[in-house]
Image (cartoon, rainbow, N blue to C red; front, top):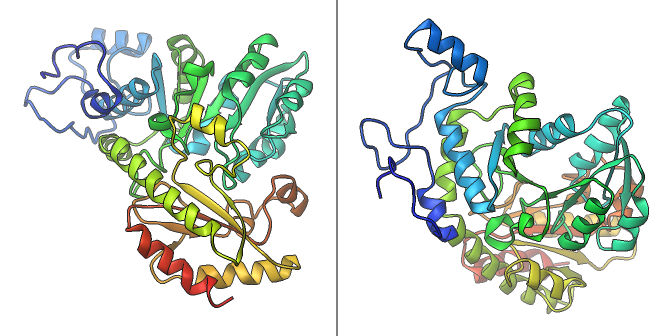
Amino acid sequence: MNHDQALPAGLRPETLAVRTAIERSQYGENSEALYLTTGFVQPDSATSAQRFASGEGYTYSRTSNPTVTSFERRLAALEGTEAAVATASGMAAILLLIMGLLKAGDHVVLSRSMFGSTINLFGKEFAKFGVQTTFCSQTDVDEWRAAVRPETRLLFAETPTNPLTEVCDIAALADIAHGAGALLAVDNAFATPILQRPTLLGADVVMHSGTKYLDGQGRVMAGALCGSEALIMGKLAPVLRTAGMVLSPFNAWVVLKGLETLGLRVKAQCENALTLARWLEAQPQVARVYYPGLPSHPQHELAMRQQNGLGGGVVAFQLAADTPEAARAKAFHVIDSCRLLSIATNLGDTKTIISHPASTSHGRLSEEQRQAAGITQGTIRVAVGLEHPADIQDDLSRGLASL
């Protein structure tokens, strides 16, 4: 297929993940080019003036860059949206969302089970600027509905959540948002468009931390927002150009190439995660396993409908203990006994990562906030990679068997 011609209609996600990009250069490269440049030479002053005034064409990489455009188009194609805008990280994408859509006096509803930095960004940092936030149960639709006010402008959901993999009903939240004249944004970093496409369920904006599964090998930071042309280009892109939380061309190229194997990786990681979750359920030292692919998960049926029949690549489990201090000691023992798994806080990597959420991703929250989110000192999160599942089990057995 020549990139200088339009791709045929009706292509499936696996094909879009490999083929969607800007047109080839005059050199005819088969692998998308990396345009590692800050500026672009203009043919004449009139063209330069026209491009700076209209925003069309390439002038300066804070405004737009061909490699970044390829990533944006490919991700939008996978999510089934009209447009996407790339950012320097997942948190930068949420920052852009807030700055582009909200003002002082506006109100936001989001789950108290959200990622710790997201909770702090809404509840602490933007409270300084008059943006009000109500936190509610991830899974109680009635609680979301009751939290809506006349000044509510945004509902923001993360599904599944980090680390306990709670699943929210996207379609139900979209109905609540639209009934109140608000928008629904969904953090799709855990599921990726391979498992779910939130806009098909009514979401208005899809947020990604491309640092996770989109890259897939833990190499670079990246983020993105996907949505309609009017929303992305009309409200968000102008703020991005001014504020400058842009994705670098190199990072865009790395994640662009990562998207080519996204489907293969995610499906394999889901399979490995399900195998691990079933094994963990049989371990006497484990009090509870959190994984949407298990029938024991409270939102299992919803997850299977909403996530293309797959549970995702993240498994969390709870160790049995009498006190928080004992639970923390046991969790540290299991984690520190691993010789294969990486003790880190990223996820979506081909290498399996193990972490203690209460002291890492959610360590900056108060104990009350952690308890509200269901995260205890005995919680361990495993972001499953592509190693053989038996080797992952053996590595966890070292700590579990010696508790």
